[in-house]
Length: 113
Length: 114
Image (tube, rainbow over all chains, first blue to last red; front, side):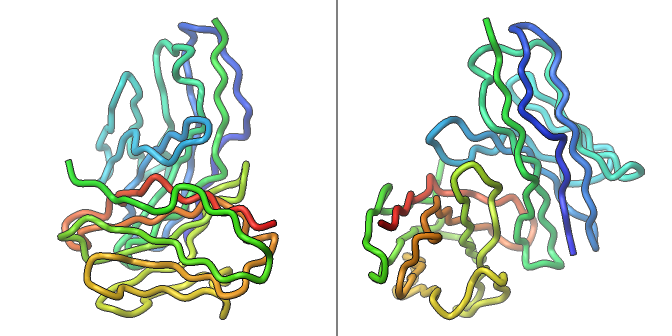
């Protein structure tokens, strides 16, 4: 079956530091890839997505590139802010599994001023 | 922008009681889902629903769970006899189903079983 593996957290950074959260996946077909963000006590917000190889998703300074050869979708941001503190989930979905999403374990990011 | 809505936002119930969680998916979407997130853990798939029937369910989705789309707009998750371990955030999601598999998630219902 499908699976998503994220780098273990928690991750603590100082403001303006560079962020990378690694994500790799296994899938039976050709999935779409997503990053979701969850702020404390809130629901899931789609941060960015990519639907085919070499696509780059981007939003709010975050980027991730769909790498089919390495089955990866690492999240990056050049300069984090305190307001970026949240839990980040990598996920995939694909047509062959009725479109359901498979999530990674989540990575908690804390940004200190 | 259209969005998925869920009610209630927080439900407290006693062990053994039945609960119904409600969702209104985006109106032109065709596939519907329920997910569960136990506090501090990852989001887990429960069930997918298409064309008025379950298309897939996980091992979590046992006989205590059921789903229904009673009136063409609401999509409900029923837990017949709640257990303490059912305490979690429950998310509803929907997708158009053909050109895009981006899931639109609702804000969630926090279920607390005491």
